[in-house]
Length: 552
Image (cartoon, rainbow, N blue to C red; front, side, top):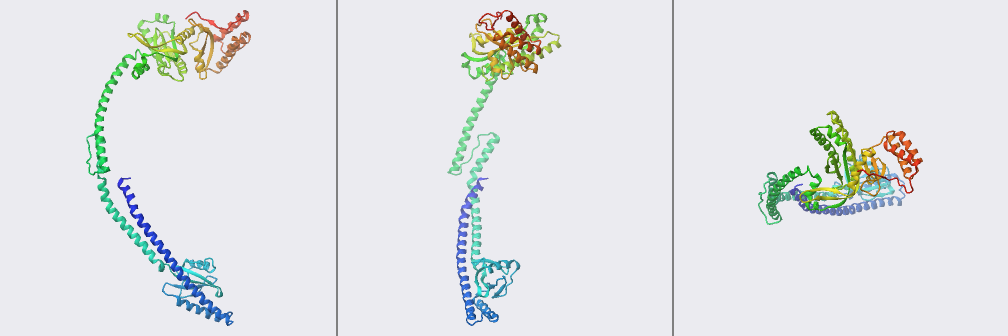
């Protein structure tokens, strides 16, 4: 709604409403007074007529003529004559209604229509004996009924409603005329007034629209009045001045930002080949933080190519480099898809970690899923190798989880954003153990605990690896299991539990059942052979089932 219309909606009701209320109150008061006077007048005539009719009846009674219908009719005619004498105007009508609702007497002829007979019948029945409005002869009349039982009549003294309320109708008409005149005068004054009042606002709106369309902040508005609207125009001019200055500064900042962004892109393009993208992001966000190391829980992944020396001997150097680059591309993509960071390449091995510089609640699961993706990618890679007549690659993957130290490590001449610690060594040892246990993928106990609800895992062995005194439980992880594999793994789990409790007979029974389902499972066979050996030669007291691994 426009401001002009809002002003009209406020001002016009303020003018019209008091006038309308005053007129309605005056009309109501007048109608009330007229009604009171009309009731008194008609009631007086009705009482006089009843008194006269009663006097006539008393004469009949006194002379023992009440039973004589002829004399009764003469008395009724006398009442009718008296009623004509009470009438003072052409619109006044006095009539009597008998018990059937028919007109028994009237001061002048009256045509009672079908629709009016029911109302007269109700009056005759005495259901309404007070002042009321009724339609008689097609005209609305105010009536004052009064019963006269000796004749069986209900006397009605009536008058046209307009005879009493014409003055009220005149007040209504005058009120309507005054309201119409007030409305016309209000509009005649408001239209030019609001036009002049709102002219500065219109000019300001035009200036704003022109500024938006042209981006020209030099537009100004003229100050026409020294009031709030003038203050608004002055404020608008100040605002455009400040916006013009700010716009100039923004353009300069934008130019500087574009230059800085281009420089950052150049730096990223140069360094992302050597430094993980997340590390570069963190350097740009907070350069000082990268100079400080910190302890953090991470998942560390090692992946190494089996028999790489043999493969290298079979391929020409250029083909070897080409195959390695294709292999590393697939492996790195599998790591980056899970938001891992490729730490370094160690010959043909890859080291990566998950949980820095950005930590996730499911970093262990991300590392395991990355390992699965690497094995899937390896199958695609080997298909391409076979098509090119090149030997396939086989890899081992080891993943551990725990506290490590992470940060920029090195000298001022050469630094690496890397991780160091016992968990790094453990991941490397797990990767090496994949050869011994003939599985492509081994994880530590903490990884298995973290992902066990999402990924099927089974205990492979309990070992002490080179460089560690504490025993470590190592696990195999699978993306999914077939029904037979699920049953076999459950039997295997029960067999392993009994094995570590030195119940080798029960353990062997479960393991044999598992081997029937998975006859080619090397680890089931390994524990079966151990059970057989220990049943022949029981282990010494204090045996805990830990196997010492001397090789890296």
